[in-house]
Image (tube, rainbow, N blue to C red; front, side, top):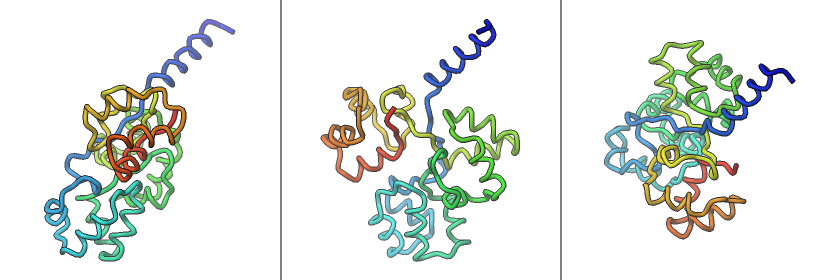
Length: 209
């Protein structure tokens, strides 16, 4: 094997083991799992029945689950508008086309490009690949709606802190029980600190690596 080939392979190994996944920052869009009732009511101009339904449907581990709840109260156009205010981020690597299309303003062509570059290992890769088709502002807008699962055993503290609602104390617990060898172990250990719903919400952002 030539020197150039060795450098390429070594570089690929380094990237695959160090390019941890990330969660898009969406401060302007309220998290359907975390937003308080008053915030939901204001953001959606919602009546009490809708707000109660959103709250009772938690935790949402996919945007499709949120869509199923809102579809009882809103038509498709109303839901698209609502997702500019409230959303549940979607997994870039596993979400089906139906879920990708919940992102406001996403065309079927762009959904295809999202799928074309799977698997994503970092948001930097997402920015680079999707930036071939839309400008920087649109990439930033789309990024708000997505995440790439974090490796339970390899993600850094700063990466874990990008999970919505994550605390430094919980990051410590994630790291304390490493290495995780199964998701059942994750549920058991983290379930010592938070309830079953919160374990399920946190689990949706991670993978066993």
